[in-house]
Length: 74
Image 1 (spheres, helix red, strand yellow):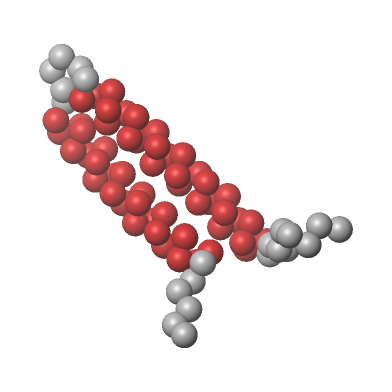
Image 2 (image 1 turned 30 degrees about the vertical axis):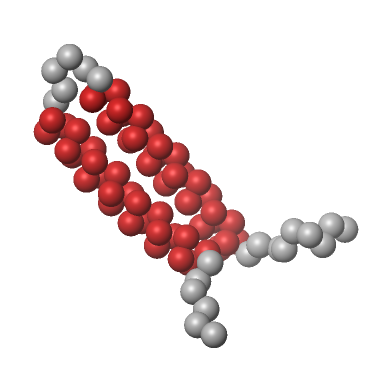
């Protein structure tokens, strides 16, 4: 048996899956913002909304990452 990989609990697996989905959505929003910015007349309101959503996703990503790897005060 391979001892290099620690066994993950169901909650850890679920958190990692959630993190993966959030990171993908964040990347998709980034691509959308980039594409809208290259339009001849960019929709600034829509770009601003997507940026706010992207920031909210970043906050959620940080929360999930903290649950996966909590800070240990030594």
